[in-house]
Amino acid sequence: MYEHISNKKIKIYFFSKQYMIKKKINEINYKSFKEFKGKDFLIPNQIHSANVNFSDIPGRFDNCDGVFTSNPKVVCSIRVADCMPIFFAHQYLSFYGVVHAGWKGLTNGILKNTSVLLKKMKLKLSKFDIFIGPSIQKCCFEVSDDVVNRFPSKYVKKKSDGKFRVDLQKIAFEELNSFGFSNDKIKITDECSYCIKDMYFSYRRDGAETKRMIGFIGFEA
Image 1 (tube, rainbow, N blue to C red):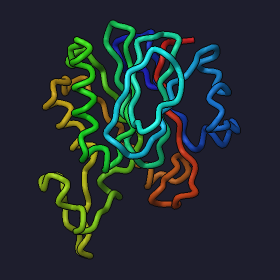
Image 2: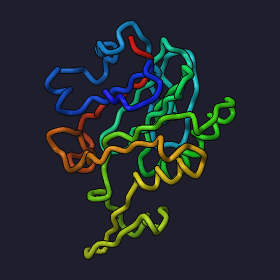
Image 3: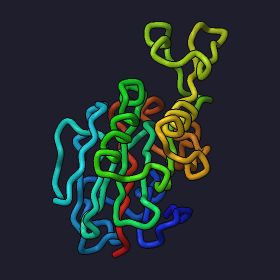
Image 4: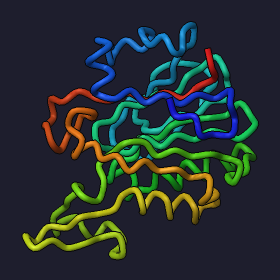
């Protein structure tokens, strides 16, 4: 559980590969997670889009990679295996959500769309705590020259083999700050899902058949 947020009623859980295997957790049956017993869930059907939705009614959302709610009986969820899980918790209101930000969603504007959604709801972005969870880091995230131009050059480092390493976390941090979120309220773990094989699932390391880590944010049970 991630505890470094101002609103102590809001809880963030990120279940690692190690934890899920040890506890024999079913990643599909969300109601098996005892941490949010009696709650219902918002579940995005993640497609690496830039689409973000708000709902106070639980359920599944197609064509969506981020969900937000103000209903304390609803838990927002995400599944990742290298992409960034980005959790948002309002500092004093019952308002929270989570975004699945892979490189495609990031370059297509999912964080901008998140800021637009929150502003439309008359919320001050500076009043959110943000946590960027375990994901593939600049040590391991590589792209070729066919897509490298989609990233700002200052976050790109060329390798001797002609490929490029990209710092996705830094891009996300600076984008969030530029949209109006407070930089001192944005926390980023330095744990790399690709490097730490025993702890995290990784799509890039293990292929398409790998399982996913699960992240939740919601009011305490």
